[in-house]
Structures are given as C-alpha cells and as structure tokens.
Amino acid sequence: MRLSLVTLLALVSAPTALAGSSCIAFDTAWNLLAFGFNGKDYNAGTSNTWASGSATDITTNGRPPFNGNDVKCYLAEFFNAIYIIGADTSKPADIYIYDAGAKTWSTQSVTAGDFDPTSFQAILDHDTNVFYALSKGNLFSLEMNELKAAKSGSIAWAPQGKAEITTDNYDPVMAVAQNHVFFFGVPGTPAGSTPIFVIHFAFWQAGAQPMGGNFPDSHGQATSIFLDVGVQQEIAFIPDDGSKTYIVNVETNTTQTMSGPATVDAKARYFASPTAIVQLASSGAVSWIPYKAGDNSANSGAKWSAVSNLAAVAPSSGGGSAPSGSAPSQSSKTAGSGGSAAPSGSKTAGGSGPSGSASGAIRHAGWGAGSVLGLVAVAFFLL
Ligand SMILES: *[C@@H]1O[C@H](CO)[C@@H](O)[C@H](O)[C@H]1NC(C)=O
Image (cartoon, rainbow, N blue to C red; front, side, top):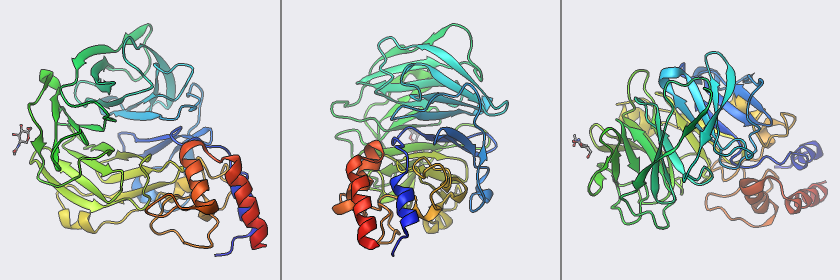
C-alpha cells in the first residue's frame, strides 16, 4: 500500500502519547468510557453504537492530567463510579473519582503507608467496595466505602500481610469473581489453575484451584466480566502472547476459549461488560469481542473488531486529524504488511526497520525521534 504524504505527515506529527496514560472502563449502563485520550475523555456509548460515528466528549473540570504510564480504572458498580489510580504523577497515591451518573470529578486523598502506588495490581471487590492490592509481595486493602465523590480527609491503605503465593519475580495478574481474588501466572502453578485469596474470610486457599482449562502459567492481563446484577462470576484472562482469550468461570471452575485479540500487545489493558470484552492497546487503538455468558459456541466463533467511534480520538491518532486508517496499530494480525508505513508490527513482534522500531517506540514512550526520522525517510522514498 502506498500512503500519501499527508498520511505520513499526520503520522510524523502525532503527539507523544505515552503508552498506559489512558484507560477504559464501563459505567453501569455499559457505556464504554475512555479516559485520557489526547487530553480528553469520551463516552463511546454501548456496543451497538461502536461501529461508526464518533464518541461523545465528556471532558470536564477536575479530571486528572493522565500523565502516568500505568493508569488503572475500576468500576464501583453499586455507585456508578470509576476510581482511577496512577493518572497524576504529582499525587501517585490519590484516587480520582469520576461519578459517571453526575459526570463530575473529585480527588480522594489517600495515605499510602507501606503501599507503593507506583508498583501494584489491584481488584475492587464488588460487594464491599474494598480494594485489594498486591504490591511487592504484600497484600493491602483500601476501603472505598460508598464513595462516588471524595470525602474530606484521607483514607488509608491497610497492610494485610505477606501474600501466601510465590511473589519472587511475579508481576501480579489478578481479577475478582465471587468475592475471591484469582491470581494468574504465579510462578510454579500448574497450567489451568489459580491460587485464590478469599476476601470475606481473609485467607489464602491452600494450593491452586484447577479451573478446567489449560491457560498457560504466564504473565497476561485479567479482567472480571461484570454482570447487570450481582457479583462477577467469570474472568477473562489474556496471556501476553495473545494466543487466546480464556474465560474462567469460578462457579463451575471451567474454562472456555475465545479468539485471542487481533492486536497482540502485552501492555494492552482490558475491561469487560456483561456482553463485551474490550481491549485498549498501548497504541491507543480500542477493539472488542462480543461475549455471551453460557453460549460457548457463539463465543468460540466470535471475532474482535475495532471500536470505530473511538478511533478518531485515540491517544496516538494526532488529535483526530490523522485518517483513522493510518492510526498506528501495532502487532495487528490483520494489518497490511510490507509497504504499509503505519507502524504495524508482526504477530511475533520485534520487526526491524521503520515499522518495527516505530511500533516499539509507541509501546514504550510515544514517538521517538529516531522513528520520526525513519518515517520521514520512508516518506521521501515512497514519493
Ligand atoms: C470451585 O472452586 C472453589 C474454590 O476452590 C470451590 O470453593 C468450589 O467448591 C468449586 N466449585 C466446584 C463446582 O467445583
């Protein structure tokens, strides 16, 4: 494919969108919210509206600067509130709260204590609205009470002791379902099994629970599949190799498989409504796969596709000025190969030349000068 100079210039002038400085979450009406997209926040609506048009700009006062590199968003379903951690490097412990009903922001002051807000993974327990976090081998909790706006004074992370799983060289991967925390990729765990922390009784189950599947004991991303009513019962786990999307049901302890995401990206983040699993790639591209609880045959045939109404505003798309087709997509299985100047990596990643290096640059720190020069060189070569 031969790209126009306009397209190439649009790519070259794309801003430095830091991977991980954005996040996605659903509100309780299952509108997909996208935060920190080129300095703005958007409501992409429900999944039936994602295929075309553009998302609604919901940017308003009191939002965080979204300058972190690992922004995490959580839905407090009882309160229709989104809790955001890591979106303001000047206040790493504080939690920004977006009241999705009132469409207002506030900032909750948080005392970190021994908890490291720059190095953790956490879940928000559905029923108690308490965070449980694993940070540097220790478990911590933080009570969010009924907050949909910050209260005066600070709330504090409380230590809950040393994790009773192997945490040496463990980059935590965790999700909540049935008020239990499930840990994926814990070193030395048999494939298809997960160690469990039982929240309401505050204990670590001995050994790992077999989940009736063969998902690898590897790093990946895990996200709970919300339900309209009640506690989550299933978790989507996507290993870093993107080979499959595993759906782990913690009621039956069974696992079904769905297609791996179209964009293989170990730094992607996921969020799931009752009927959609959504990926935010580190390039800023958003895609999704429909999900239907209990319908294994529909799920196994389901395909990933773009959330098109966010494509024009995605973090690396140059403020919506770049043609949507040219937004840097990385590691897309379906991306054009060869002559495409859009930095699409291959499924195996680590390609050479302008495309591979630009993709890597986006993944870690936006557009490096080297890749921009590379693209300019490609532009002149093509012309
Ligand atoms: C599933 O695993 C949980 C956690 O170990 C256990 O409490 C439950 O009894 C298991 N359910 C079935 C149906 O095996």
